[in-house]
Every structure is written in C-alpha cells, then in structure tokens.
Image (cartoon, rainbow, N blue to C red; front, side, top):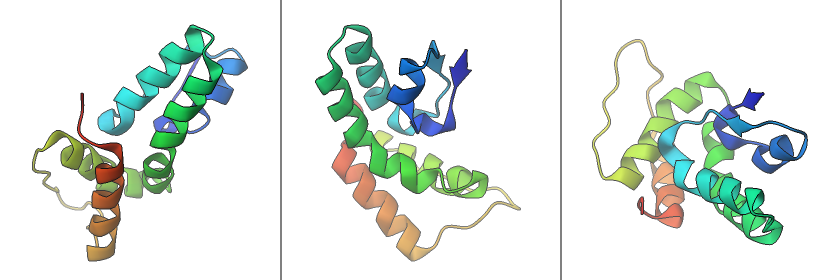
Length: 111
C-alpha cells in the first residue's frame, strides 16, 4: 500500500502499514531521510526530518492547482533551476513566490 499527498501524514501512514509514499521531488530528500530513520527505529530523528519538510508540504498541498503552481517552484528554488508555466495553469502571485522562496531557503538545497 502506498500514499502520496506530498508527504502529508508521512510517518502516520508508515505507522498504519503503508510501505512507502509516491512523492513529488520538492521535499524528497527530507521524506527519504524520515523514511530511513523510521525504518531504522529512530523515531525522534524521523519526526525531526518530517517537521523540517512539513511547512513547505502544507503550503504546496492546499490543492492540486497550488501543488502544480508552487510545488514545482519549491523544487526549482531548491534545485537552482528555472521554472516555466504552460497555459492554462494557475499563475503565481508575488506573495506566493516570496513564500516559496522562504520555504526553500529554510529547507536548503538538495544534498
């Protein structure tokens, strides 16, 4: 059994028997870290990795349009690549871009 939703309820899903999650790349490094800590029985470390990714995940998972608009921007900010839109996609706002940059800065680049 798998779940997704950008990693919302990641640890809860693992605790109830999910074998993994299908995630977007914007917070994949934190999700993998949390998964590995959880699998090794290091619950406190898993919780910390999950806490670090959660603000960005909550921001992007407010709906499919938000995920498509800002999730890819969060990934782009963290990966250092430009992001482009295709019509008829939701367009980002200045506030949304600022929020995305703040979350990306807090998460850092990909290691």
